[in-house]
Length: 560
Figure 1 (cartoon, rainbow, N blue to C red):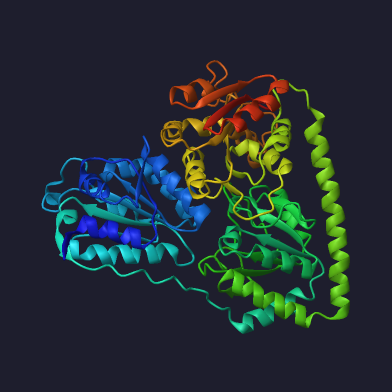
Figure 2: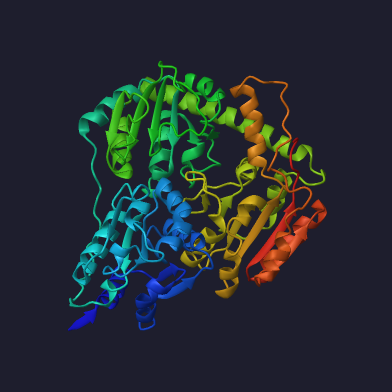
């Protein structure tokens, strides 16, 4: 039986288990939009701007561990979505991004809206291609999904010319084969790592996002407990829950952008880095490692092992399978004295971390009645009223630390943070994708006011499809993250202790953003909180609605 290739494409999406097509259509997508109405199994989710579409697909993919499927409009629409594609690429999120393209018979004439879509996406994808014949559609779709799902996972891109989707072909799509990719580590690497780790005096575990993506959090916990090690999460590689934050050995976030990190790392004789980049930096900090630490890097992404720092042992393989073998080998080889040393270390680590948590809580309570309120109060009050099993989506750069200090995150898949890519405008859409993936669980999105405005029109999609996400905007009336970095730029980077900034282009003080009113304009219930005493009852109202809601909370802008 012959069918247009657009129908074959949709047949294959159904076979791949796709539920949603995220997009914003244009003329070059009309063949697909015509065909999709004959496929009730596929639900088209409309966003008003392309970055929201990609962010929704990315949130959905993170929460389900299945590829999100996106369809955008030729060069202009694709360009609007590129910042969110960048985020997905940096986070290793499996996406199949597609865009319409001009009729191939016109491309030589450089028609309106056309462009080299493949090159636009190549640097931020695992694979980028243009489908030139209808008969190539099945091959392209199969390859796209398999490439996106094969670890290290990531996005792919397909350009779909207008006339190619109209070509009739004969094909009977077969069910996709599962991606079976558990690569076992080299036994010699495991043996060498055990020899170093068992004799460590003060080991440190660093856990990154590929731990959660591999389903290996329990294995990371077992490794930490066997070694009695301090555990930390590198800041720019921690967008998921890779270790239970209330575990006694979890020592918090390691800020790889601070010169103080060098001293922290130097306390440890052995560092076991699991599923993280060593080290992702934003500002140049030379020589984070002193040279005395022995580094063991276990990762499924072979490109990251010894990319930036010399390793004593590199272990390449599936993270869960590799950790299982490493833990079993450690458990079977540690002497009684080594086990006793690990138990003693663990007690000291837990005692030190408990004192640190008490100090952090005391700081949060110190300015409890401050007006505008500090974020510590915001998140501690929120903690009292959030429903059980809430999933958090976070894009509030300078509010992240008080959020992490207040909220226990112990289960993988309960928090997703825009930290690895950093392109703003992600969270409004990502939260909707998470809600679609987990419709029976509450979803709370924490936003900065600046972050919210990059994609505020995503609230229309929340209202249109009745997706009950509660958005909490930390409105500090500024780009506070830039002010923070300006201070760091003066000192310690330039050594200018007396230089003061007027923070040009960083303040909304004279004309503050009214996010609650904007939300109402999109059909989402908006609340404003200026007085800290109103916070708790407002949170309770928003959670009780069972509808999308936004709470605009005036928070302190800091000492700027």
